[in-house]
Length: 300
Image (tube, rainbow, N blue to C red; front, side):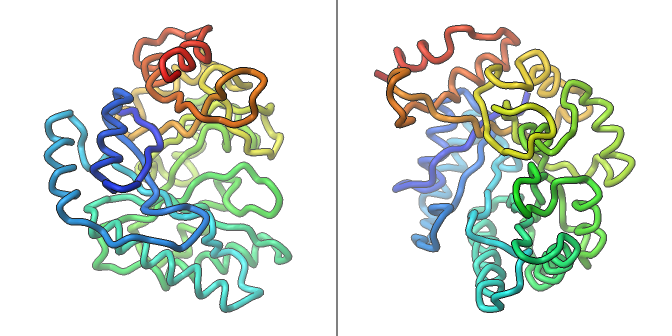
């Protein structure tokens, strides 16, 4: 099972991210190269890259299973403020260059929100932007994340994702599935093989390069996008365990983006990462009914 989670890109950059992933028992991971909500970025330290690659080899982590996530502030779908749209394009290009420096093969991108424009206009803006961004010389591939359909989000249906891919003048583009988003967009994860059949017919399974494994706090077709911990949402543990063990996607890295845990049920602040325990659950195939208490006991 190729399984991991979101990790942090802090003082030791990709080396620190690798150490965190290993502490969770992961053999894959996903990171931002800086804060997802701003443009502040530190220079890439090559020494950390060399040390991280050595540590990955020692711990059975294939660099191909290390994923970058583009910042949330990038929105390619809305062109009403041309300066903002151009900024999104230039910032995404810089993030791709950082991935090139880090030898990361994939960068996950939220397609964007059309805001006051129609979905059709939003999709055309995304296509135009991606045709500016994608450089044939780049080794890093943009992979479009399937969205929940909240507000004016583009990419909530397979048809919308296909329209974007078809409009891009490059084959260097893929897809990142998100189980919570798919559920909330109206796709029944209980019948995941049927979904894969539909995806293969419309887009092609070879385009799937990453899967975000998340439970959902809301029922199917809710268009909410609120992640839940594994087995503690509407998708449920039996369904998620079948998904991560599905042979048709066995070579695709699976990444957890589930919520942190609070110190106790009365506190709102989420402080403890759940990934070590959720990864163990998925590897063992056994649901942990005491997940939250076990996490609190471990980190306190």
